[in-house]
Amino acid sequence: QVQVVESGGGLVQPGGSLRLSCGASGSIFRIDTMAWYRQAPGKQRELVASITTGGTTNYAGFAKGRFTISRDNAKKTVDLQMNSLNAEDTAVYYCWANIWGNRDGYRAYWGQGTQVTVSS
Image 1 (tube, helix red, strand yellow):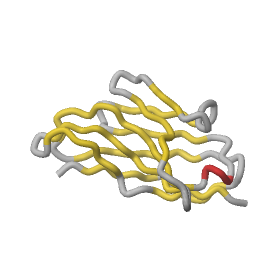
Image 2 (cartoon, rainbow, N blue to C red):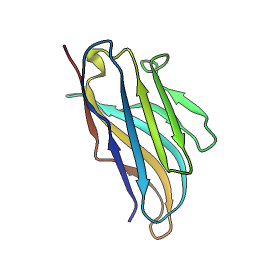
Image 3 (tube, rainbow, N blue to C red):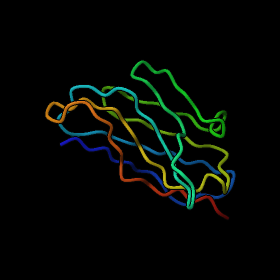
Image 4 (tube, rainbow, N blue to C red):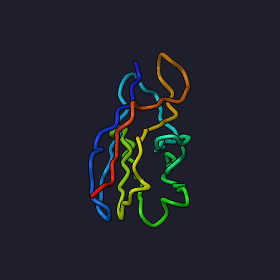
C-alpha cells in the first residue's frame, strides 16, 4: 500500500526557518509531480510549491524567495525549506504526490499533514 508521510513541523519564532520532509513508501512504480499544500484555520487548502520529476518548480506568490522545494527521486522524498517565516505561514502543511502504484494504479496521494506554528 502506498503511503505519503510528512515530518518536520513544529513551533518557530517569526523570522525563523523550518524544513519539512515527505517520503513516499510502498509498492511504487513511478512518482510524478510532488507538492506541498497548506491549510490555515478557516481557510481553503492552497498550493505552496510543486516540483516535477525533472526538477521544474512552481511556487505560490507568498512562497517565492522564502521557500525552496526539492526532491530526491531515488529516495522518493520531497522537502520544503521555509525561511523568513511569519505568523501568516501558520498552517497544517500537506505533502501531495501523483504516484503510479504497482497495485493501485495512478492516483494522487495526500499525507496526514504536519502543523507549522509561527509565534513568539
